[in-house]
Length: 171
Image 1 (cartoon, rainbow, N blue to C red):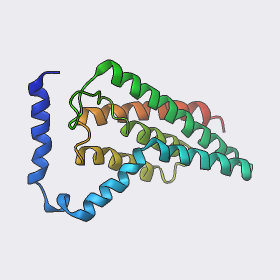
Image 2: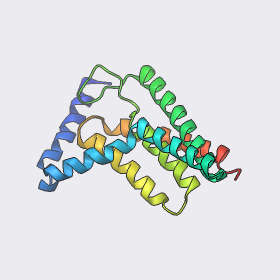
Image 3: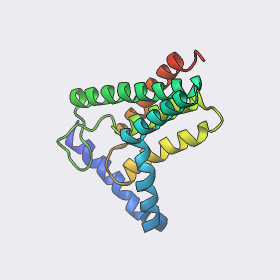
Image 4: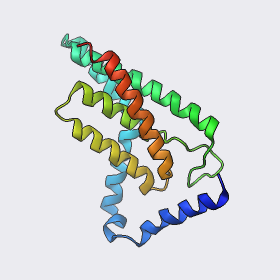
């Protein structure tokens, strides 16, 4: 990646500072921080474990499969994202020497959403909205470039959909 390409991306990101004052409000910042947790693997793992526990306690096959699929999708997407980071080595805004492609927060957020949407279709738009907001929070806090977020989202969606088809579609 050329040095000029990175500088241009940073300039575009800094253009947000000239935007709407709402984007700079303290409550909006707190909101973005809160939705950013949706992309943490620990939250997704907790959701998967809770679904598994519910499934075993109430002998519910749907939530058992959903919990297992969530955990499998998170592991696969996390491994894929980390391997790509080591091979591609694109920078992130704050640390230009570390690998930042794909986003390690967008990947689990979209993996979690795609599995939950397959298991529980009625609220699927809420799951995807949370994943998108989590990914946008990475851009808002300048923790990731757009291509990193898009790459992480693609990996998360792909792994989530494939795992859900394999583990949930049988029910």
